[in-house]
Image 1 (cartoon, protein in one colour):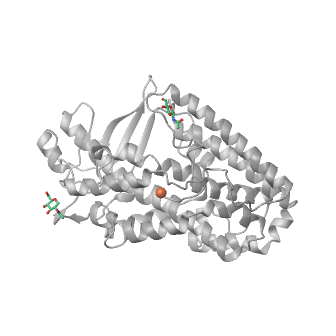
Image 2 (image 1 turned 60 degrees about the vertical axis):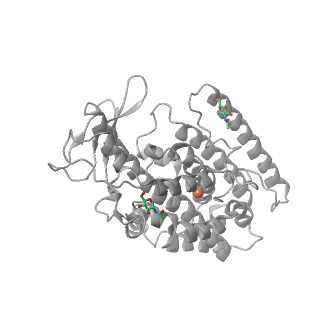
Image 3 (image 1 turned 180 degrees about the horizontal axis):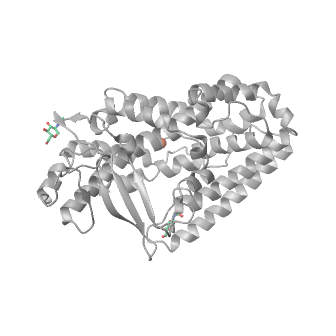
Length: 394
Ligand SMILES: *[C@@H]1O[C@H](CO)[C@@H](O)[C@H](O)[C@H]1NC(C)=O
Ligand SMILES: CC(=O)N[C@H]1CO[C@H](CO)[C@@H](O)[C@@H]1O
Ligand SMILES: [Fe+2]
């Protein structure tokens, strides 16, 4: 621990929730704590799992040295908790719904001739449409998530409320998020390696474009349309909670550049990272169960292959999860990749040159990632700029 080799993954947001009823059967959703060890051969391995938050006699701490099915079952409940945390907080709230907030505020407050509009509008493409479909087909009372996920229905509302309360500006800015979570030095963490490079490239581009139009901090402070944009975001996206750290006003070019970088990164690299691998990692149900239908063992030594199979969701529940993840992981036929601006909102020389520099840097990064991938047993492709979409569109 002193060497910083021990990590904790805490699903506390799922504590005390009422799980769904599926096919007339009560389902089970845990709020696990997982300890991970960074081994000397650079792997991050789970070494202890406690499935409920409060220590108790009927809440054993599982170890890899327990029986095969005790340890497997404990891991299943962790992966199922991760399904809910990932889909509702990481994916739906922190990319889809935030992207919608940024887009709606742009449409409400910023005129088409404004440089912020020209810069951001391509990064809002299809976001309102896909969120309309997600509300209709996934989280409505008859939606796939509501019907087939252990956290569907009542639990979902509580998870969304808790997730909203836990949102901070720092956690949305990748460099700060990585530092805050102590993940700077974890080996083979390609999400971080690739994501920080994508962040930096977006940041230089945004700095160039906005620096061209705003020559001083005073010009930022005095731009009433820009100020209305951020105020609307603060009020309706972050419920006027100052402790989120979300700016209520933008008073310098640097603050503006950082916020706009976060907006573009959230809709592009971050969404791709949390969206495009859903089927790769979740299509195999035991790695990401949408629901589980037996309680976890409360004492050790009672599990078997049969109890594990009975814990799995029904086949007709599993296929609903699989097919949704398959659909959402597909690249759409009219995909526009990060940095392409076919609508040509900008026509002046400086921003046009900055766009072509941006595209050149993304292309280099794409080559670097493809080369790196060649030597990986499991390639990490989700932040390859050639595969990242400009906006939250699926
Ligand atoms: C889904 O499968 C379960 C378990 O096999 C079964 O009881 C239920 O009737 C099935 N539901 C539908 C809609 O076919
Ligand atoms: C998108 C991408 O670059 N994918 C490549 C990653 O590396 C593997 C080799 O391990 C290639 O097969 C992929 O095409
Ligand atoms: Fe998505």
